[in-house]
Image (tube, rainbow, N blue to C red; front, side, top):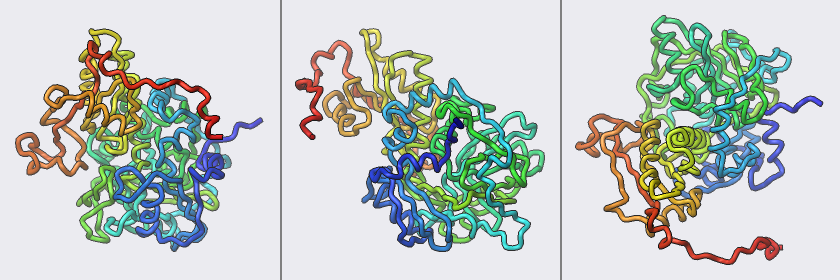
Length: 490
């Protein structure tokens, strides 16, 4: 019996009859701000402007200007849904991906006939080629710099083809064959490869893969130090699915594409070329980013020249809202895995769970559940926080809680701050450190004494763990254990 291949369509087939997790609509929708505006109310969550909520993923079947194309949004905008999709307990996804990092299964190359991503091919040499008409990329808000590819996995290699990598970047459609790509300085391997090509003044071949199994989308967002230069995160995906990711050679560039993607854009990152991100709109804004604010339009993003667009028949364009809970799933779960890997090496067994909640967009905040065996473990919780800060410069706030606290329930977490915390004793403030440049409070004029340049921040540890020698004084009210309680709901 042939093993069924994992892709977006297989995932959707498993949830399509579950109204909590999936909903389709045939009502006409405009991809220019309206589509995201609708979903904001239905299921975006995260740090999106209120009112919002956790709701089903949505498939829009009637998208203005794009007959025959469906647009999917919100597939990962629920941690419980991600757990369901990955066939794993949502509370231990960090541990699950941590294990996958250490036991990767490398991707494989398949023949053209086995690559549904190439069912339909459009080349830039065709007279009517125009990515603005081929790719139903929405805008999130009326202020966006333009239509954005928000969840496209960029696949590229170094010049020697000895290393390859996959990362996700915001990409604005600027012209009929041009994208502007924002590659945040430092840390991204695609950026390191692009620098190598730029120094040689050569265009860098890439593919942009859209409409994927969420295992791919989440697995590819690992960063150093967990996945160092030369580590291709598609191996993580193979381990998660126990099935190698299938690749296929590009049809117009010397690079591989993900063979079961819904869309693939092929092209080149052009050397020593830059473009104003909002060159068509002049709004001064890019798109809403994960902290919940509009990102500033970059005056000089790198340029991608698109040479081909391929897609499946009846393709599905996948998109996300920048500050939605989808970003929390994509960025937060790999960060949780990375923190667990780091602390388990240094202080094994002392951090039992890690959660990067929506309040921090998956990047800025983590909650660590601490296990203390003896009085010698007192203080180890703060060591764990410092370890996390040392490896992940984007992390700004760490909450430390005991094992009886549900780290996935912010009411329970904040309860510890009200009943197991004294501000003059249990706060740690670390000024003058690096953080994520998209945090709008990280400006010298906001805090001149600690912020010398944009992107610096004071960091915070909130220690809500009970001192080991006082544990008996902080026992929660104990209720009768009733194993068969569910029968009362029947």
